Image (tube, rainbow, N blue to C red; front, side, top):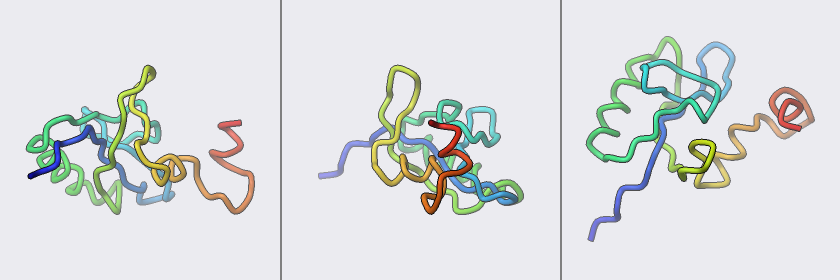
Length: 100
């Protein structure tokens, strides 16, 4: 039996600076998860993934990530995605400093 489709966002890394980015409903990339298009249909998700993958000049490593619909927009469903969006953990800088 097939597993039910769970809400997803499309994510990647920005080509020029390596930051985590999210694909929006306007076919562009945002560093903010709250701007991401939440996709709840598997067929639509596959079409959006193809569209995002065509933007190789902006983002690399494009894939879908599970999310949970939260009160302020999508939230990562897995620790890995939450960790990814906070930036490198080797020292306190960048996004980690901004989130504190």
